[in-house]
Length: 404
Image 1: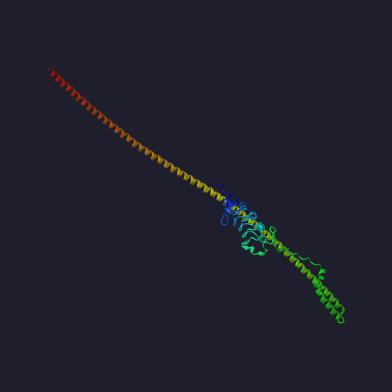
Image 2 (image 1 turned 135 degrees about the vertical axis):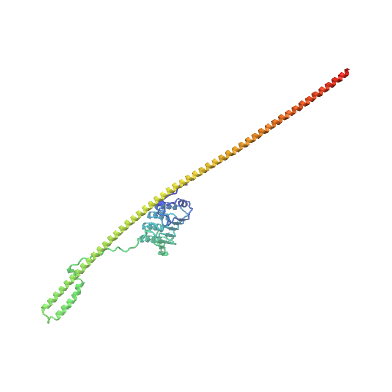
């Protein structure tokens, strides 16, 4: 059989890819929730799946949740939505997809007319990506079961039916509205003393001064002339004090603004330091996870090698046991055959002995019969000879008598 294809982290997809290519699967469930890290599908595996799905006509549900798919993999799957017209439900929840991946899906959703449900919950998508997905619904009318984001928010419920399809497909997603960045407060420039004396506070003080002048004019007959001069000096002094106070307030506001700006700079620096620290911590965690995964893969390979060696040893032992059994069986069969041949030889020897004995007996019987026959023949011949002799003697006697 062909070797099974292996992608990043050991994901094994050859059977699934073959089924997709041959249109033999309808619900493609590749949820990695119960898989080990090395067995989760990564972007390379998603690329192969996407290629297989482009010409597929049988799959209507695709579940790629809880794997290791990033924005690169998201682009592969989003590309499928523009070519495959059979997929109605797509789930990529629980993957490390960010706003870039969400925007790829948003672009695809805006031009797709078959997809009814899209689940991208429990990812790294922020408000920016969510806004792009929500905006894509303005060009889409097919999503009816839901477009789930975040922890389960259904964006399809937030876009009125009458607004669906109101935007031309392929238009740029609207940029999410964000509050303008707050600029650090700037300290107001201290106003010159002359300017300060002409401000509203000075005018407020001038009113009572004019009133005092009127009162002074009304009482001019009773007060000496030098008192009017003292009032002017007091008013001037009050204006100077007011100007000094205003300058002090402006200096205080400037100092507070500078302190606030410094505090905001410090907070920004602390936030940047914290972000850098979190970035380093994440890098360390990713590195540790990668090392752990590599170690786990190494241990898995070592275990596979050990299991393979043990299996080979067991197979060899089993082979030797069977070979011994075959040898024992062959030896037993050879011994049985030899015993059978020995018995057959004994039977043959016995039969031969019996045949020889019978032949000897028949020979002796024949000899006896021949002897008896010969004796009988000799007896008869003797009797015949004696008869002939008797007849000859009788004839001779008769001739003698006749002659006499």
